[in-house]
Length: 402
Image 1 (tube, one colour):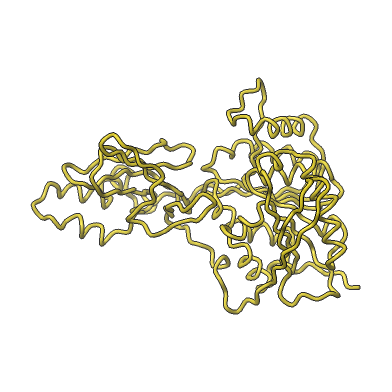
Image 2 (image 1 turned 30 degrees about the horizontal axis):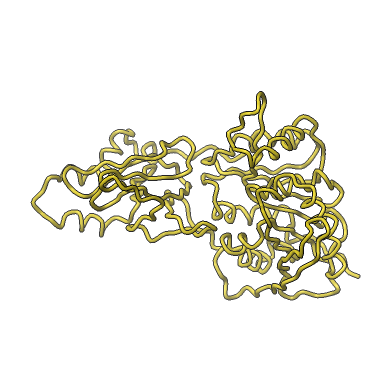
């Protein structure tokens, strides 16, 4: 589990929390209002990047005419929506929260004007955006968070090759497309480990996974590997403990790739991974076919379960997930050698993920569990890839030569 949060800035400086909050930039601005100087807010915004991050505090700001201004987020523990208040008679609105060091939060604004509500607006004062399948989202990064350098293109890192492939799946009853990554300096005489990636195209588009693989392999931190990036059909069906999907992965995809590429043909040389529902698909595939994958990489798995009753709160799409997780918790068993499991402390799934750690360990599986001060999003999952992949396929791993 993640280590305890670092000491607050107020403790480090000797200031009380109340005194530190009074000295925040937004509160110093309030003390100057009202003023006859029309440029005071313009100069304030020019001096202070938005959101304003000061020690353990973050202040969200909106400027404009409105009846109501709200921040929408998915941070468990904070009011949602977070209501902003106007500064006196000005058109500047603000709300301040405590945000522990190292945190990263994605958010939108909702604005009400003349009875009309505008939703999912990005922060016009904040250029920092995260991309995702449903569009861009504004980002607030707390003190101590930085985008990892290994997620950024490195001109010295040779790039791997992507080859589009497809196979006719009897299990899924369709032609299944996917893309296969082979590392730079790929050689037929080397046996490579295999990584199967659920929501594969999203990992490439929104989690910079091609760049991550290129960089970590170039640095010698991760063994050169082959990765199959597989997109879903109807993911809410096929990823929710769906027998045809598990059969496709274990009995069709893995043999198909093993016949065509020089792969390590044993469980320790294979890992299946996914996030959210993709985490459920990875675990359920391993439960149905425990002899195929030696490692699982589970990011913010949607492992919803019930201890009593059937009101799990997730709606009908979660019903098969709940039945699957309930059944596994009732009769847990070893389905892989190792599991790397991670979840954001700000997401609702943190409780079921924490609960499953001991369940997995009790079966004898080696579990590495990591929490992040982040939410249910692609950049959180991106930021965990280095720790996960260096543990599952470390750079010093020995290859098997023919």
